[in-house]
Amino acid sequence: MRISYKIWLDHHGKAFGDGPYELLRRVEKTKSLHQGANQMGMAYSKAWRLIRTLEQRLGFPLLERKAGGASGGGSRITPRAKELMRHYGRCRKDVKDTMERIYRRHFSSLAQKVRK
Amino acid sequence: MRISYKIWLDHHGKAFGDGPYELLRRVEKTKSLHQGANQMGMAYSKAWRLIRTLEQRLGFPLLERKAGGASGGGSRITPRAKELMRHYGRCRKDVKDTMERIYRRHFSSLAQKVRK
Image 1 (tube, rainbow over the protein chains, first blue to last red):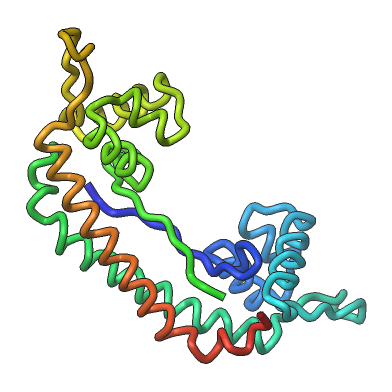
Image 2: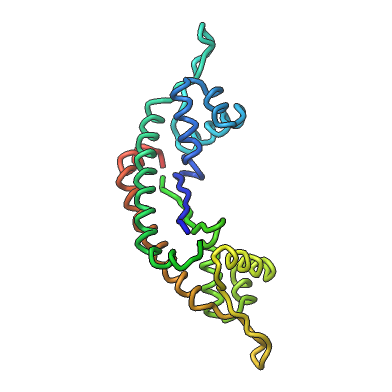
């Protein structure tokens, strides 16, 4: 037996979570929402709508679109997106470590009784 | 902005969580799965299937059915269900308190910047 969980930030609805975090990390590396979405197995249109929805809920832009040019344009994450990701990444790690500790505190005796 | 989360126990799939916890609490009080399900706005057949699924995943019975008699039968939660509920209830409370602390630790500065 183990504890499972899901966390997200709420602000006028789901405003940030693991999915957007992973997507933005990929956009940060590839400098492209197309490639980031593709790496996640997500349609570009879906990724684009997701980002728009999150931006509306958060009230600040996550991506800067760079149109055209020799490199064919692309997307960069904004400084505020970077700040959000940094906080969220640390928070997520903290939750992970803490959840395992809480689970052991409450279930170490019981978990042994539950058949494997 | 606030942190939201969902926790559950996993053992061969979702084996326990807030929904089953609330359902069993109501069964404990009313001594009836019918009434417990009804209070949750859940069909009896759905509640019954849920309990069966959880019992299979956990590997022990949650309910004892008492057939017929003057009181018309009913359901009691088993001692192991009671033990599970006690541990889960404490764990859930611990998670709630800890989540708020973790959120403040990581987001107190950022949350002020996100428009209300």
